[in-house]
Image (cartoon, rainbow, N blue to C red):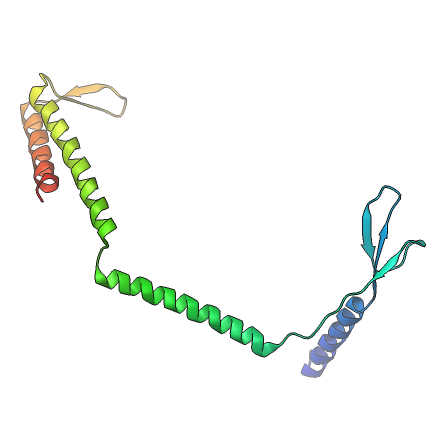
Length: 153
């Protein structure tokens, strides 16, 4: 299609759309008390609904959009500044609580490793596989390293 044909087709579509929305709107209530709206009057109880429309102010739309962009930019800048300052007091407290919880957990594991007669792990089928002396020693060393990492400040 040529540019003129595309332009003409688009203008006709715009004109057709405007004429479809330019009609009157009517409101009526049926025998069951239900309210209906339509573009043609139905019966004697139909009343015309006054609908006022006005053109959109492009400058106002631009102001609203710019305000949203400015707000989002300010929030992003505030987040970046907070991240640059380092972790907050709440974050530090939460991290300390998590470290303390892990420390307690690893100490309980160590207690179990020391006091158990035979150590085992479960395989994929859920069956016990007992550890030999070297595997038990490795498990203890692994838990000792975890205790050193999480229980020292």
